[in-house]
Structures are given as C-alpha cells and as structure tokens.
Image (cartoon, rainbow, N blue to C red; front, side):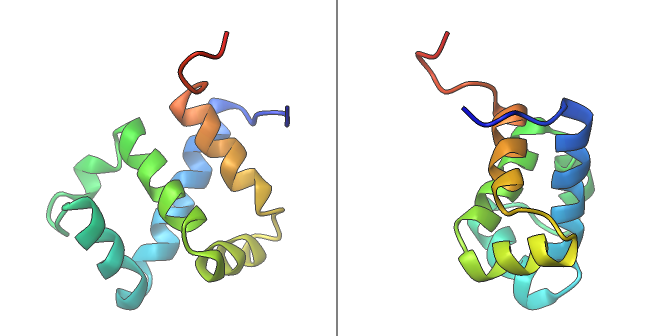
Length: 95
C-alpha cells in the first residue's frame, strides 16, 4: 500500500487543485456542473473534506488535467490519489 500523506498536506494539495481548476473557466465549469456547487458557494464548500475529495476525484477522472496539475507542481500524479485516500479515509471494509 502506498504511503499516505499527512492530512494537512492532503488538504493543502486539494485546495491547490481547486485553485488550479478555478484559474480557468474551461476547467472549473465542468467541475461545478458535476458537483452542483455554484460560484457563490464554492468557498464554503471548500471547507468540507468531502468536497475536497470531489476536487481530487475530478482531477483523477481527467488524465490531461491530472497530468497538467501534477506537472505544474512537479508532483508524481500518484500523490493526488494518496491525498484523496487521506481525506476520504480507508475504503469500506478495510481495517
């Protein structure tokens, strides 16, 4: 099992991912449409761990976005999955 990153680091990474999406309308609009969150409630939603998981899931679901984001930060793209697991907790049924 890959090493998980610390919770504060995972949250920071997810917030940076949200900033990455928000920097371009072409990136943020599909995400907002998928989540049902509006621009006026985005800041409040970003305080919720479940929403941050959705941000990371959105990146993981679009390889070109994932690679661009990871490349911008010089990160291994697998770190996005590790951050997601840290924020979401273990899958159901895991000890």
